Length: 72
Image (cartoon, rainbow, N blue to C red; front, side, top):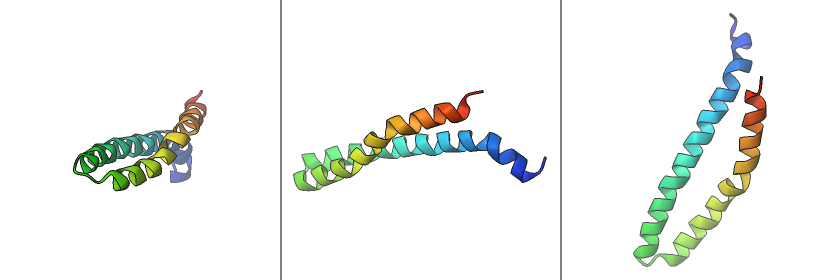
């Protein structure tokens, strides 16, 4: 099977794994953010949480798109 034939079947799985990685990174960054806040870095923690809000805002669309791509 040529590579161009593989792409449509691999793309949903690839995007799903990228999304999984993104969510894992978000969780790890949030753990570090909580630690920074406990050390007195409230302003830094607030800034990081603000940046992480983008991941939260986009999550529903990403899930929906992955569901459509994975549908038979």
